[in-house]
Image (tube, rainbow, N blue to C red; front, side, top):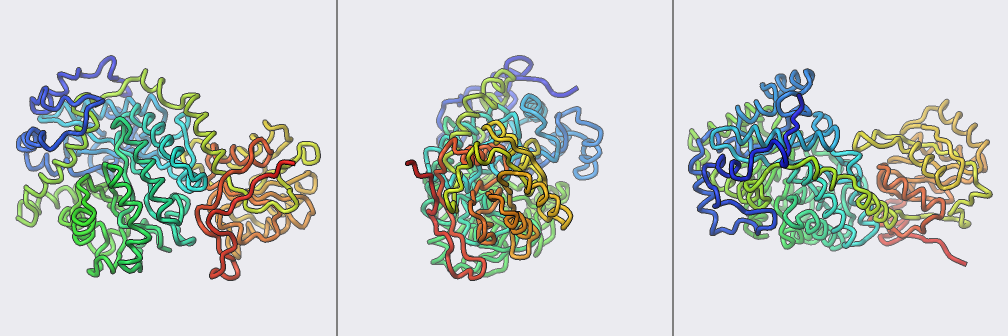
Length: 612
């Protein structure tokens, strides 16, 4: 049976939770509105650490994936995946064997089917951990950036992503996003969110950050990062995580698949990359994630930042004064595995100054490597205690020693509520950016452009629960009074697909085409050109990077939505229909396609509708 224990019914009481954590009843009863554990309370946390065995200490440093919707009774396919990758059957078995301090949720690991299931899984994980000798609450995390990176989908509220928020330019909206999204995560038992992205995206060719960044202007990004951090950490509901230190915004290599090198000088790093992280630290950020990339100006050893003592201890800890939790990016990514084996990476990360070791490809190898490094004297037990103290401080601040459980009624009260959904729609309406509007084509008239064909790319939904984009746009336009039909043409339409789209366009009054990362030789470019040749009005909607506009000079109307999630596409439809005026402005510059040294549209560009 799935885990169904809740804070209001079958969960252990607050007293038993505290008793399970080494008899510290009263000492760590911090409550939901208490302040973070001051350092005067460190002796109580240190007493807890002193009771741990060395294997328990090693486990506390790891944050691990696990397959399944239930902590004790996952589906057989998930049991098989766990046995293959981790050597255990369930999350409960993972906690019993390795005593991990954190677990990360993924959609693909089947952890996030629906809100009530997620809450049950979280409770099951906490119950299994606290049942162990000297059991501790678990810090459950996920990547809920919104926009193109989401792990918890509908019916939870999905907000616009970072670059869309950057286009809106409202720190108040960024703060509201963090506060409301944090409420929902907390209700699900997820207490550490790997967001916001603090990278300054100064490279249009960046394959991994792009619209996950608030923009290209360091001060603007810094302000929005700080605001979102304040929202997430409001009332200590969720630990926000600024990523990816020391900055992943100027790379043409994806650190998932390669080893990027950032060639910024120290002065450039101070000016371009550092401000958002400084702002996050000033805002009281609870955790910072490392980047698997090399910055020779900061450390010329050839090591990735995740394994760099000069970067993580010298700069982050000592120069920037950060004393919160440092978590690695996933240790399964190629950027951190290029130079060293999987047994050395976790040891070197701890020596560099890391506290949490996230998602190693082989937990047994990584866990035993850390254990052996202490036994051999390469790492001291005191070094482990230093990181464990930071982790326990965070768990105490979040109230996990007081009560780690969530209730099913809390899910109903907080997740995907009408008020939250309305707030997401309002924020999205302030982000949609009109870049081109020749001859005042937009807004489309329901009288002269009633019959609309929606074509274009239909990338897989970021959350696994929304889309497809053409269908969402067509449905939204139909609700707004048009007669809209959808025809998916994909990211690389064939000649036959293009021909079908052109034939359908001849029967329409106007065409809306969704574009996704258009390049000079892209078949999407050919599609748009042939649609224009029909003489029908064509409106292009960039459903990811706004840079697409540089490759489509013949389009009379161009809208940047910054993501293909429903909330942003519905907002774009309202702009196209004239239900709301476009209010966003570019948070990044768009260079000319034929001369990248020249700016086609500068930061701040954004048109609106004139009212006569």
